[in-house]
Length: 298
Figure 1 (cartoon, rainbow, N blue to C red):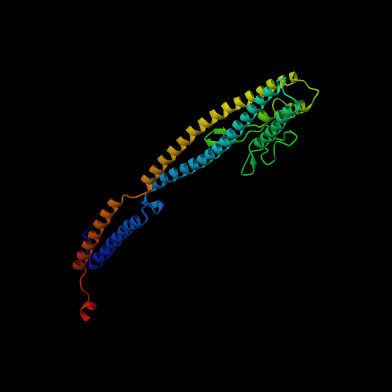
Figure 2: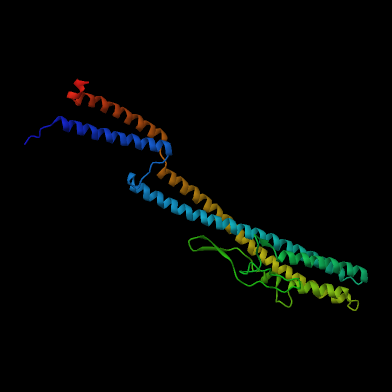
């Protein structure tokens, strides 16, 4: 059976093809104006799924990077405070060596006692170092000042951890009790310095009673130096992690761009080609569509 082709069928086919050409031109124009290859999931479901995967991964990596930068801030502030504390105790030990000299009179010992008292107050200030209102040596009790003026310690032994990846955590704080409340609350570094100044100011005490304090100060220094080494190791690990996250973020951004962004030169070429097709369709349509009676009456 032979199907008869009518003028109406030719007209309908022409309009459908013309509409299709319009849609292609609209697609290329949208790509040029936005720079994106995909505007609706139906444009390319595979690329849409891939793009969503890259976006999700990039959000995770950026969050991990934010945690890493926050951890680095904590560790840098902690390392600075611990380093300054070590310097304070080194100075205390130097003064104790001077004070152990039998030739020193009461005035000289008083002068040493005053300096040690100032160093003790500075050490107290270092132990109460805070970042954005959070005390870095208080354990998980970050909102309460860990060290009191009398040397009492309020901090706990809790560790603060931040996630840097899947099942990858880093401890950002140093438990201050291990530094400033060492070896115990009755003999911590503040109580030690208080005992030193009291001994220096007591005229009944001999210089030989000063020497045992030098050993105790040295023990405090060694304890803090050990923690410095631990901090340095964590900082090195964090630097490697930050570099890895930055590199991964760049790779994900590049992959996402490949999936979403258009090749401008190619789209311009495709648009020009489609415009030529559209003009050719109009020219062909002018020959196919026959004049109607209305055309003759005008």
